[in-house]
Length: 314
Image (cartoon, rainbow, N blue to C red):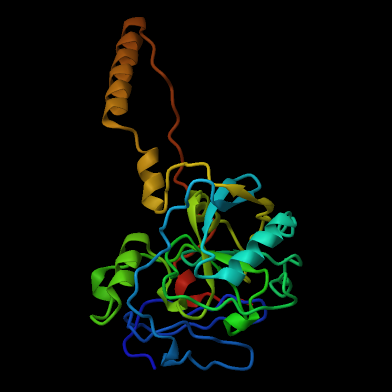
């Protein structure tokens, strides 16, 4: 039963199911993602309550540990930490499919800004794909892994017993302290306040990985223009997916890590200013000036203001 209300849609990511949206609510300890299929619109029960355990999404890989390197054509590499200790079958499925080249050439067929990017269906329709165990398998859930920004999880058709090959990477929303009910688990709340995400999916989907490098690519992808079914107008292609050994590179779990890296240091800014002053003085001495035309105001090709509250998936 829902107690309080939030601004957002309760969405399930699934091949054959449709998403529904709800009214405003605060984030409550008993809330979970609403499972909405073609035949049912019943909300998830209170049996999947979030429990207060330490969040392990941001556990760095050990030296030499196997990680996933997902290369998106024209965008670059996304590196994913895996959690076999919490999602054994899910990790084994993902790794084996990657090693078999199953995901190579597959598109991200559904992208919703401020929510997630979804792929892994060889048909590109959202209705295909299968696991190494057969058509479907039960990946289960573990409260140590939640839907923070950068989390990687399996799409399903109403329960984790229908996991297959389709997966999604969370972008989600940002939150403030006031949006969480007092009883909300402190570990999860702290993680969502720092990383953002989509807490309404917790307990309903198998989270098995976390992006530790290339999260900026995921956030760029969520902004690509899409059609009425949330399918990119231009294919976003998984060029390759490989299992590699962790090479010791720095962890960049949060989108703020990339923003900070792009900002010039005070020393660089000072050098640029000095250089600019020198160029201005030189221009004055020669009696010439650089002619520049003002750039027009950029306009987005996609209105995403209502993406989180009106998202519809198949």
